[in-house]
Length: 354
Ligand code: CUA
Image (cartoon, rainbow, N blue to C red; front, side, top):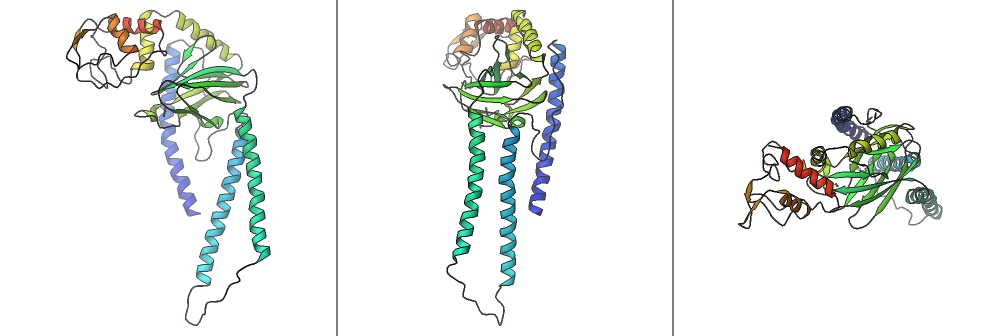
């Protein structure tokens, strides 16, 4: 039992640190939302616990019951077997004056018992697992659909009215079906509070569904190691009160339609470029964006190129066409991810960084 206690201790201190970090993030994103005038997002603190994460989806309870059944059985067997081993080791240890006793080779009633009881338990676990699997694999008809794209190293959500966002917004009490694909490598979409997880695969669609039962903000992780910033590939699901989802979609739509090209470019920059390119003149994985428009740069193949509109467009769509000297050829293509308006935005945003 002391092993279990110390394990629990480790789990609770690790999740405490994670909770503190997440709380900071939540506060920052709330500030962002307030300053950009986005729809009011319900601010429910993301709870953390040493035990199972909060349970905020209609089918999560069934998953928990099955998990607890397996865990309970495992603990029971672990304790029982450990106790028996220790007890028999002490009781039948070699001592002066004690001779080894012959033990029976076969006992029908014992063998039948230890076969039949575990078999019955396995059937119960199988039926529960099968039922939950079928339910997870079969989204209800008329579920609300959201398109999800995984990429190194962020999530992008596209709603039916064209609004794109890097947080997932959904209404409470409604089945939501995510249609997911990846831009590059394998990722995995994981929402612990909903007890759902699904691989996200390039060149094909996978799906996942849930019905959120409590308004609030819930963590989303990438659960498939996908490279350098895998651990940073996280966001939140915002579950809106009734009516809030429609309000959010409308305000986000207005905001995205009325952006100036520079504002759009800044949004795209914060969404896609910021991990590798700075706007303050310092180099990161790639060159800075500050003050480079109009400059002439030397490339790795010895040629030179001027940073103009077409150069930027090419660098976004075919990053390997020209590699600036001194930098690795590690940028992925944004073909199919960024629209023409997005690219124009990036060009104009670069021009604005003098
Ligand atoms: Cu995406 Cu790990």
